[in-house]
Length: 461
Image (cartoon, rainbow, N blue to C red; front, side, top):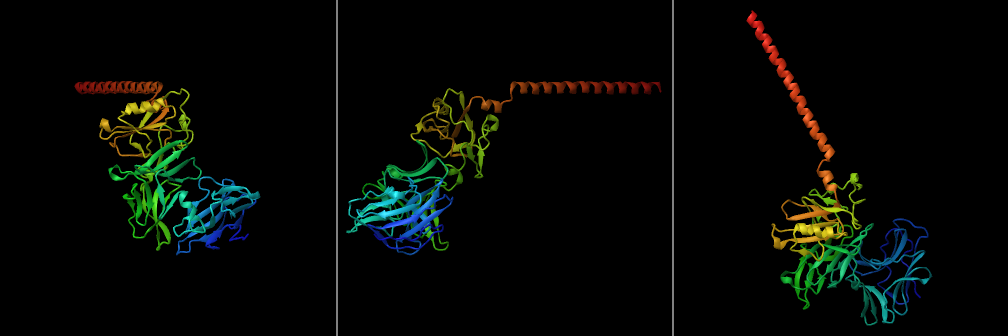
């Protein structure tokens, strides 16, 4: 058994490569620290695509994640990670991270005691070697160069030039320290971006071909993302407006934005030639839950939901998100506020009052958005939410009415003074008027008396 070992326990990226392919029976090992070290990345580059920079490289990696070490096989374009075997399910290992292409053609990631954490499942298919193509597609091929497994069939959060995605496939991006995640999905009638939270799913951007034409697959070309029908005819395209050819499409794990990227020789970096969302406030998680993105691209907490109501001034801590259990609630309408999120299916021809009642009747609903174009009844839509996110400030008169569910009485206690306070104010005003009248009367009496005295003195003289 031949051993290829590019680097062991490396903290910085090593840009060396070893071979153009890995053949059956070969095994690569990467040492993993015995103690956890935050920020550690051990990476051994195994092979590259043998092209001009930036080129594709394949690496075996051990990375510190959440108190453990993740062992994975990765593909890089320059310094951008474009594919990762552990994108959806991490394989955690200790002491050692091993990549082996077994004698029967199965590519495996292993830990101590030959424990298998990831595999291609290609045993007995005549696999002869692992190699990286000039497109960035990592493939297992047989002696006739026929592909038996390819990374293009297992998309992560990046789509490379020349790659196709069929209907019902998706890219997924997972923000760190968050329970929500983003997806870019290819559907029959559109491509769309979604915010996913548990079983909940809300769209925040979409692109549809004209004339309601159906999509069969999408492909990334040099000039844009093309949409095709079942006859392989291009029916629409999201174009790049730069001369340089596109290299990849990516779904950002921090913002959830979708971008088309080209390589700039001037900056020697990848730059976006197209982004689906160009405003901060159009991003699904621009602010924390119960926060509003303002016209100045700053975040402001929803008023009334503050610590004096048992809630945190940080917007997302202590907010009332659970109303099941018979609690008395009401809908609070926020003036000049909308949401970038849309639920599916939408409810049409629903009045604002009926929309609010739909949310009140569902104890898991925490907010509702009513949309009406110029007050037209036929174009009224209602969207219900089980999380308060994606809210932003909008111009008055847009026909949007955003309502959040709150414990009953919060609005009244803030919008109207209490009875006791009202009485005190009235009493104070009345007392003030009485004092003014008394003082005014006394002043008038003294002035008149003084005039009479002055008049009597003049007559005697």
